[in-house]
Image (cartoon, rainbow, N blue to C red; front, side):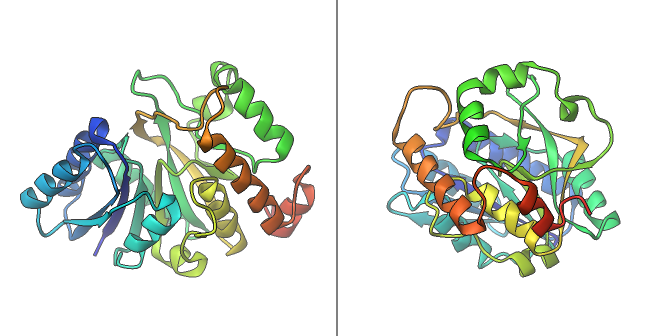
Length: 270
């Protein structure tokens, strides 16, 4: 098995059909044996119908998992990851649209750089504008700044927006990750004590703790047509869930205000 893709769906009918269509086309172009797990978290829209239709079109590839309620991002992903058999694991959001060229670039980079366990592409909004998807591990002050001023941060010149060479990063949002099998085997499943977020930061920290690097591969281009549930100033239950997750993350990994000791522990700049 070459690639095992894991996609979460929760009321994602507006993007899920294109996500699956583009992914299946990309996998067909790449060839080989692949599988696509689509985990539906109790959607109340037509997401289930879209998943079933794609399963009928590609029954050997599309493998649905249906839950009757929203189980969050970690429990649901783990349900698929326990079944995944691929040499590469593609973690993909239901609003991310991949292509064969991007997947090929990510796989090639992982093959040529065994110290890297997780490779990520350059992301773009649906409008074609560059999307800020990588960051340093979040401290409380940095997270507050990102919460209040993310649009401003994205509008400024960003090194990752213009670089043409791969570079290591602390973490990336889990819109599109390609993980090598040995890195996944050593890092393990997602932490199910985190319901919604920041499960991606926790997993990236654990990738580093497992002795692997996380690399941004700018030649791989992927559209992430995101509708972030916790984005913006208006408070919602997602913001509070995210805040709880952030405090849990920092307590778990024993850092709060600064990163120097965390970097030293991870060998981040070694």
